[in-house]
Image (cartoon, rainbow, N blue to C red):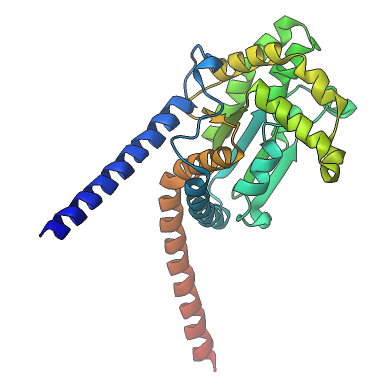
Length: 306
């Protein structure tokens, strides 16, 4: 009897711990989601947050989420009813490349499109700032990943005063209109700000210098841009607050711990696609029934002709 009671107590305690852990995850998720225009204070978000997890717990969960994301992407591609646009923004070394490499490790490259937005070309500068972005927006059935994005035109352009203030200030509403258009035409938009601390950025930059195999990543511009840290934080604060909508929300991702960054982003994408996943499965099942009936009819007619 005593053994049973002890077992029951252990099970109840384990259930309580899991419940508490789940509450921690949800609270972090809600806090990190910005889905309407508002004043944003980046100081309210801890870049070293891990949601109460350790690295081993996260690794197990990330593996499951990656498999789930691979299934969702397969349905997205097959159903071709929606597109998905994942925007990755953040300071240098915040992990944009790493997110693509790790979170998207299990998806099928056939249905994935990665776009890197660097310094505009002469042709791109001859058009409006959204021209080069819109032409890379993912088609129906495609998971599009933006490594940097149209937000560079209210970030680096603002910080380095490349255009007058009255020009970049107008762009917030132009961006909102652009993302609204995409959403109204079937694109699921997710935007992630990879929030890294200044201390962690310095550590990664120095670590990069010591890693001879990754010396190709070295750039004096990374240190030069670091000198504008405060200006970039202000620019990001305004971009997050002024370009957050229900159809194109921002997620502030704690990025000091790479393993938690990957978990957070994978979970956010999977949860956002869940409602669509059921619809895609249902419609594909119906499509399969129609095609099966068409094949049977073809065989019936073919047999009758013999």
